Structure formats: C-alpha cells, structure tokens
Amino acid sequence: MYKDFQTYLQTTLNEIREAGLYKNERVIITPQSSGIQVEGGKDVINFCANNYLGLADNKELIQAAKDRMDSRGYGMASVRFICGTQDTHKQLEKVISDFFGTEDTILYAACFDANGGLFEPLLTAEDAIISDALNHASIIDGVRLCKAVRYRYANGDMADLEKQLQAAQAQRFRIIATDGVFSMDGNVCPLDQIYALAQKYNALVMVDESHSAGVVGKTGHGVTEQYNLRGKIEIITGTLGKAFGGSVGGFTTGKKEIIDLLRQRSRPYLFSNSIPPMIAAAGLKTFEILTRDNVLQDRLHANTDYFVAKMKAAGFDIKPTQSAICAVMLYDARLSQEFAAALQEEGIYVTGFYYPVVPQGQARIRVQLSAAHTVEQLDKGISAFIKVGKQLGVLK
Ligand SMILES: *Cc1c(COP(=O)(O)O)cnc(C)c1O
Picture 1 (cartoon, helix red, strand yellow):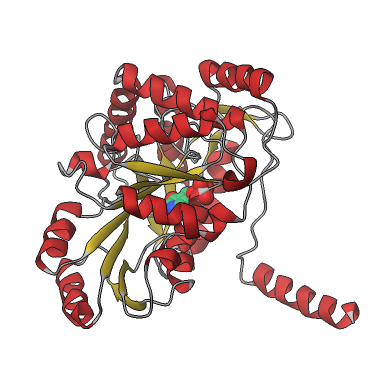
Picture 2 (spheres, rainbow, N blue to C red):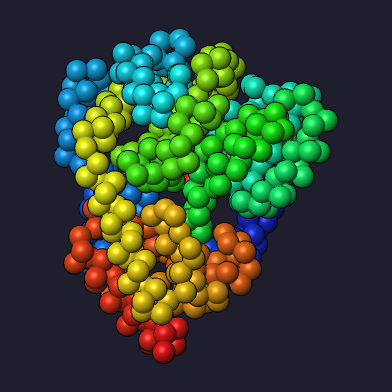
C-alpha cells in the first residue's frame, strides 16, 4: 500500500519544487536576536523575525523561566481542567486581562488553537461570522470548524463589510472577525469603522492582535489603543510567540461569559496540554517589563520610522505600513528570491514572499523591524538593500 501512496507523495513534492514553492528551512545556531549566526558560521542581521520587542533572548525572561522551572517543575502532564492549572497560569491570565483592559483571559498552547477553538463553542448554524478576506489561516480554520453562516469582505473594505452585515441580518448573532495587523502588507484594520458598523448592525467584534499587540498604539497596547477602543471589543486573541517574548502560547481575552464558555467547551483548551509553568512565568515577566516603561515600544516605533523613511528616500516602493512590517515591493516572484539570496550574501537575513502567500504579481520582501535593532544594524540593512537594488536593476 505505501508504494502507491509514496509515488503520489513524491509527485506532489516534485510539483511543489517545480513550481518553485518548496520551502527550505535555513538553520540558525544562535539564540533568536537581531544579530544571528546561520549554519556554516555566517553572521547575519535578522530582519524577518516576529521578535518585535527584542524579548526572544531577554535575560530577565530567561531567568524567570529558569526560576519557575526550578520551583514548579518542567511540565503539567495534564489539560487545564483535570490537574493542569497552576497559580502561574491564573496569574498570567490576570495580567493579560489587565494589559488589554478586558474582563477575563483563557490561555492556549498557541494562538492557532485560540482561533481554532473560538467560534465553534460560541455560535451555531443560526449565527453568522463576517470575516476579512486576508485573515490569518487560523481564523479561517476556526471559522470552518463552526456551523455559523460565513460571510467574507474584501480586506479592510468597509463598504463591503456593510453589505455583508446587511445580508447577515438574517442570522441571530453576528461576529465580525479581523486581524489587527495584516502580516503581508503591515496595514492595521480600520477598527474604529468596524466598531461603528458593528454598533449599527448589531454585531460583536473579534480582533486577532498577534502582529499588533506590543507593537501598535503609542504604548504598544494594540489596535484597541490605537483607536481608543480599550475595553470595547468583545473578543481579542493573541500570541506569546511574537512581540510578547517569541516563545509559544496563545490567548483569548474579552467578556467574562465568553471566556467562561470557552473554558467549558473550547476543544483545543479541553483536549490539549497546559503551557509549561516556565513559559507562563516568562509571560508574566514580559508583561511586567512592558508595564515598567515604554522604552521598547518607543525604540521599535523609532526604528520602523527610520527604516521606512530611508528606504523610501532610496527609491524603494514600500507599502504603506502602520506596524513594524515593511513590505518592499518587487512584484516579480523570481526577483524576490534573487533579491533575498543576494541580501543574505551581504549578511542581511530576509524572506521573499510571492504567490500564493501574496496575490499573483505582488512579490515582495517583508522586512520586520525590532526594538533590538541598533541604528548601525538598520544602516547596514539599508545599504545592502540599496547595493542589491542597484545590482538587480530595481533602483536606478
Ligand atoms: C502568528 C499568528 C497566529 C498564530 O500564532 P501562534 O501562537 O504561533 O500559533 C495567529 N494569528 C495571527 C494573525 C498570526 O499572525
């Protein structure tokens, strides 16, 4: 039996390779940081991590994790409701609620699970989910697992959202679901207008803050800070794997009855292990650091403004961004791969994205800025972009 299946798999893999879509993993042999070493020993400056606040190798987080592993052990060997809830988990849920100004929080092993287990317990076939077309795969999967009627609106298109909301009046309850920051362009969802439409058409709002929390808003409290909607959004999901330390863990935070029902019915919560105490403790330390002062967010915002301004001045075509994501548009798929490879030769680590990750003919290099980048590292990155840009005919 395996012989036939093997042939089928090999054919599929070859098709992926021939289409130029095969993903090779580059191996890093140092901690995640703004400066890393890849296998073979080359030092490169990293411009493609979700390490927005530079916490992935933070000494205080590492120490907090070590201390908690010493005092509370390695793992819980249980899901939360059987015997997998330690005080550390409850403390982390409390600080996440405080950070977002919400009523309660539930932790998951990842934001993929938070989104995957969100809709099905809350809505039935009588209800509707109205989802942005560019939402993250985990929201799409979560919506698929739920029996609610599905509506889709074009990315950030409020006229289209309004049309879908009108159609969705046929259902009992409605949830509008959106990413806070869309990861390919770096644009922020127009949450003020989404919220206004939700009020007008009697809908709830769900925002995934994975790329926006810690980044967007003057003090990095996410899109609800940016649009002055703190405490107004019913459901927020997010990850501990990006700005908040870069390890693992996800959460849903919001209205207390929603969180309570998720604890009773959300399948990735009920049937998957608790996050380890050391991860929860490092999470606690992350939020402690972020409430101490605004140094990291200020540095991230300054770094992003600096990089984007210099790249525009150099003549690059940059997508308008409101986050720490800077999409350098190249349009051509092959060019995006050549460009990224040439940058790696120059010691600059980035990834070129092309169809189907972005629309056909919209290939780009996505640069992600971090509070950990020094001005010297930013300058090196910009110079390398200009050098390669000239070599490959992107800049004159
Ligand atoms: C990264 C990301 C996720 C997944 O987060 P994990 O915690 O890594 O599972 C979910 N939603 C969005 C919008 C993301 O960017």
